[in-house]
Image 1: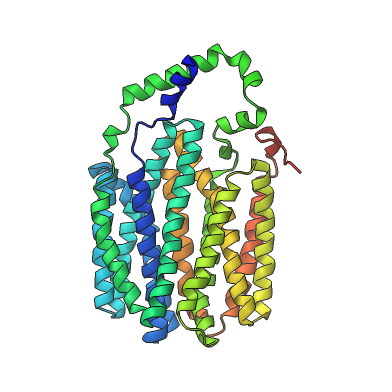
Image 2 (image 1 turned 30 degrees about the vertical axis):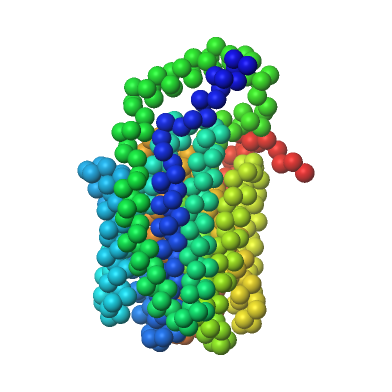
Amino acid sequence: MQKKIKEKPQNQRSYRTWSLYLLLIMKTLCQSLFFSALPNYLIYTINMDPELIGVISSSTALAYIITPFIGQIIAKMIGRRQAIILSLFLSSISYISQILFFTPIILVVMQLIEGLSLGLFWPNTMMEISMWQKISTKEQSDENFHHFNTSWNLGILGGYIIGFFLVILWKNDYIALIVACIIAFGLIPIGFLLEREKKIIPAEKKNNEILLIKSHITKDEHRLEDIIPKKALANISLVHLIFPAFIAWTLNIYFTMAKSMYNFIFPFNLKSANFQSYWRYLFIFLQQGLQVLGMNWIGTQAIRKKKLLTQWLLLFDTFCAIFMIFSSNIVFIVSATVLMGLSTGLKQGLVIRINFDYSSKTGSSKYINFGELAAGIGFGITPIWVGFLVNINYQYSYIILASLSSIVLIIFLLSLRKIDINLTSPPISV
C-alpha cells in the first residue's frame, strides 16, 4: 500500500498542458478552414488564373522557409509564450485583410505576414513540447506526443467538416472565410492562458531530478533486465536518433511537396468534373482523417517496422504517381488524393519523432527549425510550378513526382544501409 501511494505523484506534471492543446485545436481548425476556403473562392467565384493562385498559395510557405529562424530570435528576446501570442495577433490581421481585399498584391503581402505568424507559432509550440519531454516520464512523454498530434489533427479535421456544411448551407465559400476570421480573433485570449516558461520547472529542481534518476539507475542497474522487458528497454532511450537528421528533412520536403501538389490540382479536377466546391472539403477531410490514423499508428511500431514501411510507402507513391500520369478518371483522382493522406501521415509521424528526439537530446530548437524549413520548401515551391503546369497539362506534375519519390527512396536506402536497426529495436512480430 505504501508503494502505491508513493507512485501516484509521479504521474502528476509540473507543467500545464491543456491550454496549449486547446490552442492547437482551435488554431489548426481556423487555419484549415481559411486555407481551404480561399483557393475555392478564387477558383470557383473569382475564376482567378491558376498561375496567380499558385503564387498566392505559395507565399505563406515560402516565407515560412526563413520565419522559423526569425521566430526563434524573437522568442529569445520576448519568450516563447509572448511569441505565440504575437503570432495570433498577426494571423488575425492577415485573415481580415484577405477577406476585405482580393487584390493579388494584397493577398500576397498578407500571406507573407501569415508566414511570419506561423514561423512564430509552430516552432515555439513544438519546442514547448520538446521541453516537456525532458522533464517527463516515458508514459508522460508518449502521452504528450499523442495529445500534440491528436490536437492539431482534430483541429484540421474540424475545419474541413465545418467548411463542408457552411458551404452547403450558404452556397458560397466566402461565409467560411468570415467564420475563420472570427475564430482567429477568438484565439488571442486562449494564447494568454499558456503557462509562462519559468513556471514549468526550476533549473535547479530539474538537475536534482536528473541526478536522482541517474543514481537509482546506477544502484539498480543489475536488476533492470529482470524488471523491464526488452521491448520497453528499447523505448527508454531516444531510439529515433538512429535515423540521420537529414533523412527526416529529406522526407519532410518530399511528403509536403507531394501533398501540396495533389491538393493544389484537386479543386481544378473537381471543377472540370462539375463537382461543387463543397466536395473538396469532404474529400480533404477524409484525406486528413487517414493522415491522423497513419500518424498515430506509426508511433506504436518498432523502429525496424518504421524503416520498412517508409520504403514501401515511397515505392507506393512512385507507382501511384505513374498511374496518375495516364489516368484522368475523376474516381481514380479522388481515390489517390484521399489515400495520399495515409501515406503522408505514416511518413510525417516518423519525421516528427526524429526531430523531437534530436531536440530533446540536444536541448536545441535547430532540428525542429530545419524540419519546419523543409516543410516551407515543400509547401512553398510546389504551388508555383504546379500552377504553371495546370495551364499546360497538370499530368506533367506527376512525372516530376514519380521521379522525385524514386530519388528519395534511393537516398533513404543508401543512408541506412550500414545501420543495423535490430540493435536498437525488437524484431517485427509476425
